[in-house]
Amino acid sequence: MQTREGSLEEAIALLCDIPELQQGEALSYYAARVADHPHIVLIAEIDGQPAGFKVGYALSCDHFYSWVGGVLPAYRKRGIAQFLLAAQEEWVWANGYQRITVKTSHQFPAMVAMLEKNAYSRLPDQREKLVYCKTKTASGLLSSRING
Image 1 (cartoon, rainbow, N blue to C red):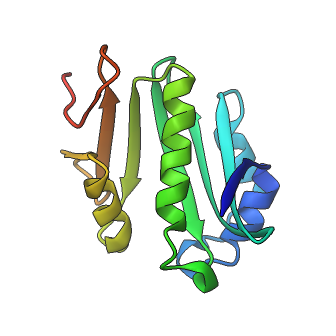
Image 2 (image 1 turned 45 degrees about the horizontal axis):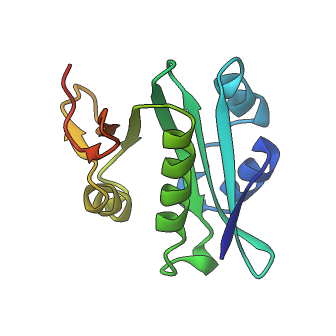
C-alpha cells in the first residue's frame, strides 16, 4: 500500500464509486471548494490500483480542514482509511498547520471510531454533523484538546 499526491479529478472519480458518498455534485463544485486554498489530494493505491482518497484544504495559516475521503468498497477492512489519515496528518504537520478539523456524522461509525482512536476530540456543534479536532502543541506533541 502506498499514498501519492493526486488530482481532484482522480479523487472525484473514486468518490463516484463509493455509494454512501455520492452526492451528485459536479467536479466544478469540488474545484470551487478548494480554489484559492492550499490543499492536498491523497490517493491510496494497492498494487498500483487506486483504492481510496482523502482531500483537505487550509482554512487559515494554521488550521487545516480534512474535507472528504473514502475507500472503495472492494478495498475496505485493510487499514486504508487509517493509512490515508496518517499520511494527511504527516503532510499537515510538516506544512506548519497546528490544527486539523474533520466533520462527519453518526452515519459513518467507522470514521467516528477512527477519529477517536487517533486522539481527535469531539467538539460541540449545533448542527447534525459531528466535529472532531486535533491540535499540535508547541513542543510538537499532539494534543486532543483545543483552547479557544
